[in-house]
Length: 159
Image 1 (tube, rainbow, N blue to C red):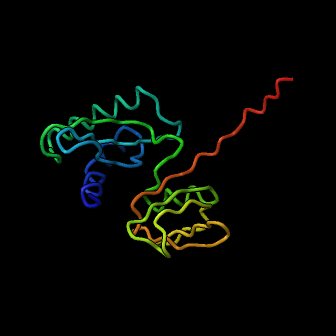
Image 2 (cartoon, rainbow, N blue to C red; image 1 turned 60 degrees about the vertical axis):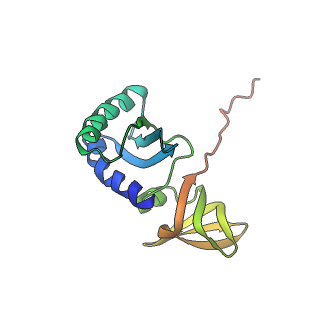
């Protein structure tokens, strides 16, 4: 599946960028008989429904020509949400100091799931602080990584 996602990213990224947005992530979800191709996009001012529709039209034309997935599937284009996927080293660099969740393909020191502060980003791994311990997590060993949203209060006291 990792190879399929990488191939889809390579195929779709130019189409997304042509509309002025960044391709955040691509995933294939659902059953084998009724898969959904999810494409997450972002832009400097965020993403709205009209943006998603425009990118969807652009990608639909490309997917019709290239036909990278066999059979029928549903295309969904949306914003990455508050728990934004972290895929490329640049994504991680942008969020140093924030809390992230990482799921590894194989256990590292007896665990596959890490939730902690992103301390550093190197060429081939990130450093995450979990319970005052630092873990070096290799990019190629990651199954998924996401930003943990910070919930802020509005500052209104009701007084």
